[in-house]
Every structure is written in structure tokens, then in C-alpha cells.
Image (cartoon, rainbow, N blue to C red; front, top):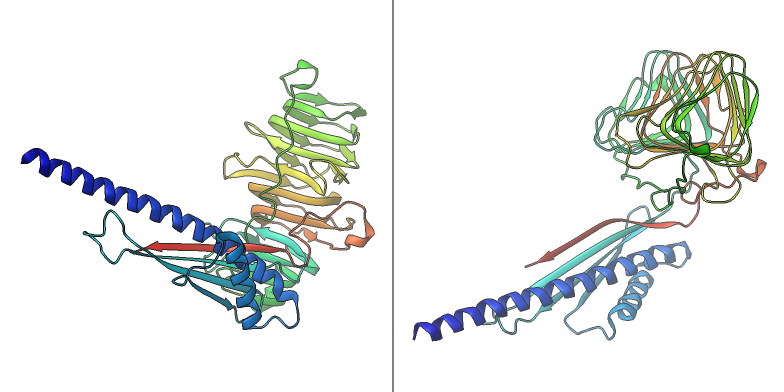
Length: 404
């Protein structure tokens, strides 16, 4: 008798486990279908006749393509947001119990949802990625950001997620903070908005460039005190340019590994069609006040459109710093997803670039620089990475599921 009861109990437990497994599998299939339907329906919003019925029809057709014939008990709902920029798709279906119906005869209700939004209608010049820290975009003293043709975004959810105080001025076509703003109205110029949805990293899918062996087999820092032309490769230990040396970078990708790229005294760093990738211990850059920096990003290849690329595995507080009073050309995208980017100069920075875009963990301006972020894309053949330009790019912003 005990053996029979034990077998029955084990079969019951196995049945519950099997039913739970099939429910989880169904939930995953529904979530995949909801994701695809939300993206397709949001893409359809560009059509002028895209009303609720059309969006619902698009969502249903995509769900059917993903799941096959739509079961009668599958509920499909699609809602357009108030700004007509995104769609939420919700799917709900009853998963009938089989082996566990004695314990739960009604089965499980599975509900999933996905929300997608279209890319913005504005060019992106600054994105402060970190939602946790305060002052993701920060200006102090007499610092300025001039981004008249583009937008500044902060993912910080703090009440002072964007800070412009003292005599600082943040001027942009649009300034959007997930949290709030610190400073008075006189510290800002342009349309401002709070409670903005968090903007995902638009370059998160861009692979990092390959890291080759140390150039020349050298693992010590390269110190340069005379004029030189450097070729692309992996510079282990970093590079320091001193005195009045002028270093010209040939076209290609430069990996700065386990050290810093430092341009000090009255040295000059020049390059066109160059990308610099910083990886490993202490890998960052520091352009000192008397130095001259004049750089343009690659037109093609793994770092097309990206001038500086910081390792995604770097410590979250790593600082990349410009104090140079002659860093007038920084053409391309500064992408430091784990970095604190500090501009502490007294003259304009990047103002002679056709475009400069900044995607960093945190941007901090001190002293009296005027960080000029142009967005004249037509004036250069350096491409703008996808996700920074206005258009119909669509991305998922949320997923949710429940099994009850």
C-alpha cells in the first residue's frame, strides 16, 4: 500500500513538473510572438492610415505567422501610445492542465506583453546612459554645451539627472531627462522634458574591434618625444606623447591596451579615418591643456563612425579626460559605455567637426569649455551610427509575462 501511494505521489509530482514545463515553453513562444508583433505594428505607424484597427490587424497577422493558426482562446490586444510613437501588444492564453488537472483543473493563465517604440525624430548628440547615478549630464562653472541641431538625453532617474548650475548653459534643440533638472531656467536653452523613457544604448550591438598581439612584441608604454607616424595595431602599456612632438596616425584601428593614451605639454595628435579602442587595465585617454588633438573617425570597417570606443567590461568609474584648449576637431562618435567623460578646458571643444556624438555613462563639464556638438551629417563622409539619426528605427523597450 505504501509503495502504491508513493508511486502515485511521484507520478503526481512528475505531472505537475511536466505541465509547468509545457507552460513555460508556451510562455516563451507567446513572448517571442508578442515581441515580433509589437515591432511590426510600430513600424506600421509610419503609414498615415495606421489607426487602432490597422495596428491590431498587423499584430494579429504577425502572431499568426509566429504561432500558426490562432487558437480561439488566445486573446490579442494592441494599443497605440498617446504620442503615436509606439505599440504595446498583449497576448493571453489558457494553458490547460493535463497530468496536474486534479490539483489545478482550471489550468494556468499565461499573459505576456511587449512594447516597442519608433526611433526619435531628433538627432542624438548626447546620451548619458546610467539610470542609477545622479547628474548623468553635468555642467558647472562657466561650462557650455551647444547642440543647436540635436538632442541631449539623460537616463538618470534622479531629480537632478541633468545639472546645469552656476553660470553654465546647456543649449540643445531638445533636452530630455528620465529624472529631473538641477539649475534655473537661465541655465538651459531649448525644449525640456522630464520623465522621458530610458533610451537603450543604440550601439549595444556593435561588436568591439579585435585585439591583436602587442605591436612589435612590446608590453611597455610607448613614449614619444619626436615627430612620428604611427601605424594601426595594439599598443600595450599605452602611449604618451611629450614635448612638442607631432604624432600622425595612419588610417586604421588603434587598440590602447593596459595603459593610457596621453597627449601632454605642447604635443600634437593628428589622424583621419582612425578609430581608437581602449581595453584592459587603466585604458583611457588624457589630453592635457597645452596639447593639440585633431582626429576623425573611420569611414568604414569595424569602427565606422566611432572615434573612441571604451571597453564594455571596464570599471564603471573609469575617467576619460580632455583639458586641451585645442581639441577643435573630434569627428565621429565618442562611445564610452562604462566611462566618465570629463571636459575641463577653457576654449571650444569639437566645434570644427561636422558632427560629434557622445554616448557615455556620464558626461561632466568643468571650468569654461564650450562643447560644440554639430550634427551636419551631410558635410562629411564619416557615417553616423544607426540609432543616432532620426528615422523609423524601432526598438523594444519592455517585456512582461505572468503565469497564474
